[in-house]
Amino acid sequence: MKEKVKEKVGDLLESGQIKGFLGLSNKYGHVGPHLFCSRDELESLVVGDRNRPGDTRYSLNRQLINIHRRYPDDVFGVLVRGCDERGLRTLFTWNQLNPDKVVTVGIACPKELAEECECLEPFPQEFVGGEKGEGCSSGSVAGIDDLDLHGRFDYWMEAFSRCIKCYGCRDVCPMCFCNECSLEDDGLIDPGEIPPEIPIFHLTRAVHMVGRCIDCGLCSEACPADIPLRTLYKKVADIVDDEFKYRPGYTEEKSPLNILR
Amino acid sequence: MEYKTVLTTCTHCGCGCSFYLEVLDGDVIGTIPCKTSPVNEGKLCIKGWNVHQFIQSDKRLKRPLLRKDGVLTEVSWDEAMDFTASRLREIKETSGSDSLAFFTSAKVTNEENYLLQKFARAAVGTNSVDHCARL
Image (cartoon, rainbow over all chains, first blue to last red; front, side):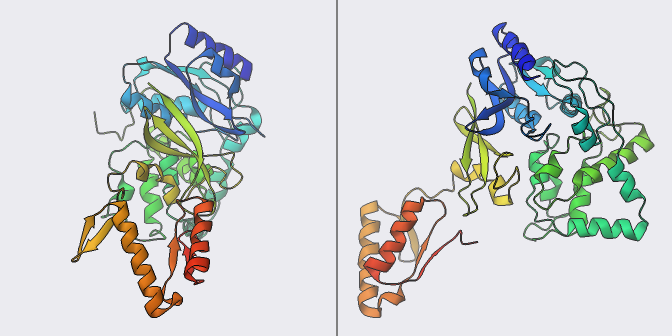
């Protein structure tokens, strides 16, 4: 899979279709984001499967936004899995990236990762590596739905009580791009209070994930307290889908809750 | 354009979390926790997440300040060092070594921290040395 990605990226760079490719690189024994600008650099390119599939995924779309904001007229390539592509579609509708300035190189996720993520669509529309796998339903949401009201409340309050208010869930999120963050609004969240007031802190963020969260799961991976944030946002997405027939990233339509037309 | 991700270690405490600093055209614009670091495994505390902000902050102290008539005033390094050395000597002579304590920093090297404790113990004669990163 890695070689196919390298070949594709090398061609895109050499033909001048893209100015740089935002992917993952194995440098000094560690895997992290890297902007590849020539074919020679591609030796170190990896796709984020270090010890097991998808264990070194990063929020590449977030870094792409940073680059795009300074170089809005240049075209950049980016490595995408199914979730990243959903992210791009949604970011286009929110005018955070320009579809004319982004070229994707896709990879499909293996069954093992799709199951771990409980991903509904573990592949982008076009991909150069991997095989199109089956989507998986969410056992984690169903497990909590099976509890009674008190059980669910206790489950979430216990999880939220572990929060150290690092803001990592927001800071890693490829869909968090607001200039003013509700989690820093002193009317909602007391700025000096640690740990944060629960459940308001987490529910404020959950509400803001409506119409945005594309279920990449990077928030859960970044959480030092192992709060199952992904499960929470999966539930939020399910509610919005039931009520509005909309799930972020699966269509090119704007979120029905997006009033900024 | 130049976009780099520079792997480095957090300066805020002794844990030693790793992250990449995002550097765009020489400006440090973001922090990305390193997933392959065995220390932090892609996670950070709030201080680590915001570490890129202090590097180029306008509020960063770049020159020594000395309080003169109650007002912090910018002075030369020579003046600051002379003042500090003479006051330390004066306090040590009049009130004894244990009237002094030393507090060092996570944002300097191990060697510099070593040097300060050596200075406190050997030159001044007190064991009162501590460090902001003693979590």
